[in-house]
Structure formats: C-alpha cells, structure tokens
Image (tube, rainbow, N blue to C red; front, side, top):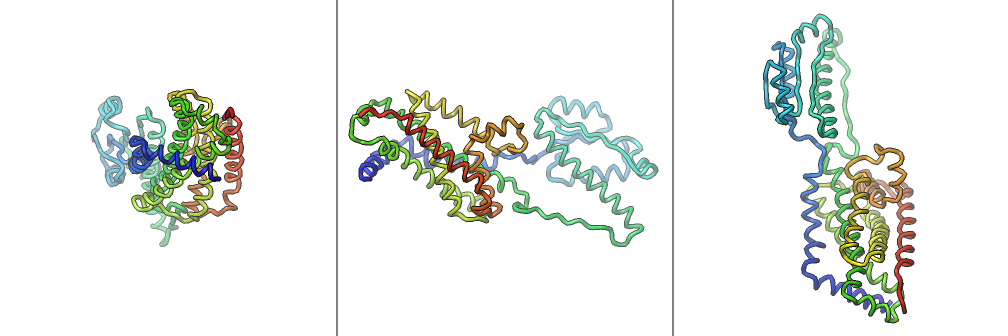
Length: 369
C-alpha cells in the first residue's frame, strides 16, 4: 500500500507540473458542457416557410395564421405561384412549402374534407422528419378545432384532452442531453489520459527504469489508474453542479447511486485506456487508437440517436459499449429516480465489463523484473 501511495504522489506531481494538462482536465470539460448543451440538439428552432395560398379564403387564412403564430416558423415568402416557392427550396432559402389549393374552403364545407400540399427540403433527413412532425401537429390541431366546432353545434360539452409528460414535463431537450454529454466528457478525460499515460513513460524512456524496480505489476497499474479515477470523479461532481446551476437539470434519484455506478464505469474505461496504452509504442498511436474506439462508442451510445432504433446487428455490437450503459443509467437515475433494482441489468454488465477489461490490461502489461 505504501508503494502505491508513493506512485500516486509521483503521478499527481507529473499531472500538476504539466501546465498544458491542467486546462485540458479542468477547464475544457466545463466549456464543452456549456457549449454542447446548447448546440447538440435536434430541436427545430427556425423553420423557414414559404406559403402558397391559392384559395385566399377565411379558412385558408386561419390555417396560415396558426403557422405564423408558432415561434418555430419564420415566413420567408408568401405568393400565389408554386414555381416561386420551389425556387426557394432549390436555393436553400426555404425549408418548407405549404401549398393551399383553390376551393380549399369550398371542399371543407361541401365535401367535409380538403387537402393541402407540404414540400420539405429533405437533404437532412432528421430535420425533415421533425419539420413534418411539427407541421402535421399544427394541421391536426386545426382539424381538431374544425371537428370541435362541428360537434359543439350538437353537443354542449365536447370531449377535452389533457396531456401529461412524465419525467420531462416541459419537453426540454437539455434535460435529456446534458446527462449524456456529462458522461461523454468524463469518458473523454478518463479514456484519453489513461491511454497516453504508459505510452508517455515509453517515449521518455522511464518505463525501463520502472520495470527493473521491485514495484509489482498491480502496484504500478493501480498507481497509474487511481489518479485519473479521482480526477474523473471530481469532473463528474463538478459537471453535475454545473448542470444543476446552469441548466436546472432535475436530480430525482440518488446522487450516491450515480457516483457508485460511475466508480465502476470509470474502472472499465480506464482499463480500456490502459489496454490501448500497452498496445501502443508512441503517443500518436495511442491517440489514434483511442479516438477510433471513442468515436464508435459515442455514435452508438444512444447520446444522439436511440439505441432501440438501430438495426439488430448494431445493437448486438453495442453490448461491448460501456458508454451506452452509463448514459442509460444516469438518465434513469437523474430523470426518473430509478433505484438499484431498476438498473441491475446495466450495472451487472458494467461490473463484468470492468472486471474483464482490467484483467486484460493487467495481462497485457509486460513487466520484466
């Protein structure tokens, strides 16, 4: 134990003597959290809309007013010619064209149904899906008003609908994204630093000196990983404080449970970094390998796209993705108030993952006495 303490002192001295390392560890994650929480969003704040109203009736103007009254829609054109609106789509100055045909109100009155045309710029498929969903929601609301008006002539009290959104009642996208971004930042710190740690010893030539000392393998690995485990836990605590103060992220569940799971998760991530470190001969190799795996883990973690929406083969591969487990756990604890019994499956997977990764890291490190 005394040997490990001496190694820890040496590692912390190396970390705090490196002036370039301190901003990377303590400043950049906070800046990234503040920026990504606002930037990493699929919400459509501005939908550039061109209206082609060929009917010019009270009904068509009422429908158009619903779009104008929404904060999501910005009118970039209003014409009576579809070709003009089509040019706006082609030039990229409009995202949506709403065409209301002639006899729109007449068909509503006589035929009890009418149609409108939506043309959406679908270069960005995700954005197009959201535009379509937002627009159809407004059209459905307009339909509901027409039906309610029709029913109210016969029934004094038409049916009312009340919505209840659980766990995120305000539908705030930051509430969903910030916990995942926080996991990402903690992972980057732990993964990159542990991945470069042993390699740095190789490059400066001190690894040979360490190998001929009486330090045992487990003491060396513990001394290398524990400092970054402590730093990552501190980053998580500081990140949670920033998330609460700046974004008012609800913390419904147990903070102790969050840190307990994080402690296991960080062992797995640090062990993966150490494996990469033992496989690499230079810091450049280590950074490339770390970045290769990190990009795959992040894109398949469920941070930006739901894991359930992935194909079967991708979900099968995702079993070896520790980030996916921790993002799901931290969202469940913070937003739903999940307890230990609710996350036992994900937690068991992380424990197995940490044990296997650490065992491989110890096996891969070759110490010549």
